[in-house]
Length: 191
Image 1: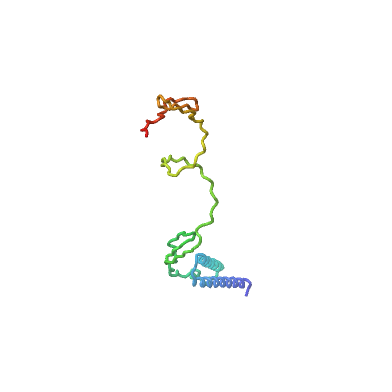
Image 2: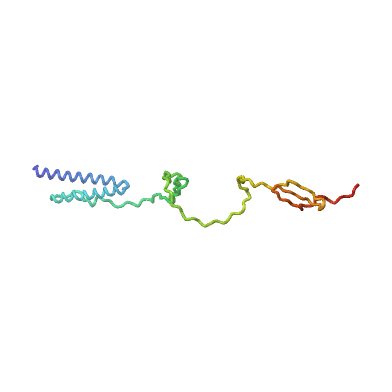
């Protein structure tokens, strides 16, 4: 075998091996549920197989696998998954209701740690005057003692005027009252 044929043979064997690996990997993946990332990898594998076949055809040879045959038909639609129909924060815990009727009463904390106190707000406007209150039935506290008053006026002398039958009073401030009321009563019968 010449050197050129040997290299061509190695290229064909490499391409065939690569295609076989890609085909095998894709076949295994088709038996599993493909997630978005797996579907992207399958599309990339088919693109790589198409590139390899293009290189083989440019060298004047025939690609042993048709890359368009690698992708199968779409499978049946899967069943709907379970979804959340209601979520409530009760007592600091999430209560989650699912579409299948199940309820999770402790689906995790729904409140965080307390935050820091905020700054005091500005003073608001004064409110309207309120109504006068009624009289209180509860006595208030006793007031302080008042200051001493001035001295009062006392009686320094009292005389019964025998002619008028009236009291004549002299007061401590020097004033007098000559008609301060009757000073004797009518005599009663002697007995």
